[in-house]
Length: 256
Image (tube, rainbow, N blue to C red):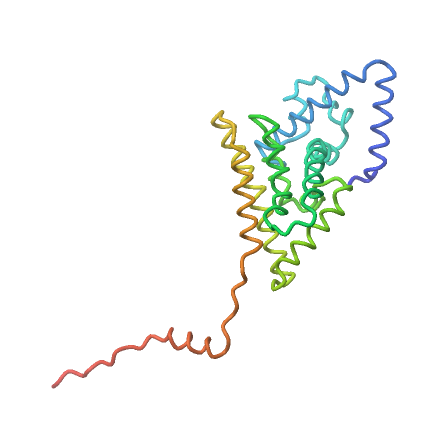
């Protein structure tokens, strides 16, 4: 995190925006900020976080002022947070609606859909080409950005309630196994959507996001609810070990 801290950066940015509005430049500044965010999201999605510099973003956005990114948004960390925030609000709102509607359900798939469909519905609303799925896939393995919440704070209590319900459906799983399955489910959703978005952008044909959302919901439901295979007991293991023994045929000595 930057030395100034996120709160001080936000306060500083707010003051600058107020000054721009007071001089009649607010609308133009907001438009420039939006252009920089969209350009950065596209470049990050297409090239990767490590391969894009602030100068490249400013140039691709057609800005003559090399300090435009710092002036309108702030640091690189501020930029990535701002890009994500543009999408997280809409996804969180839909997630909250679905989780509240699914309260008390005894259908695991209905509840798990609340974690998948808000994301794919949002990607569908972005049109084609879009870049957010690939941008999210770039953040997922990042040691800083990949561990940050992807919902607004008002949704987090519902997420905790959802988690407790999902855990209750799989009482025979250890916490470690359950965590690995959920991690695998998250990776499946993030990277499948990124690949589908890339294919749609390359071909020019929009992805079938309703179909993708349903398929991923089925995938996640199967992954999280699969029965854990029990380990063989000592007697069974002994039998398996004996079955693996390869006996060599005896060789007869030739006469003479």
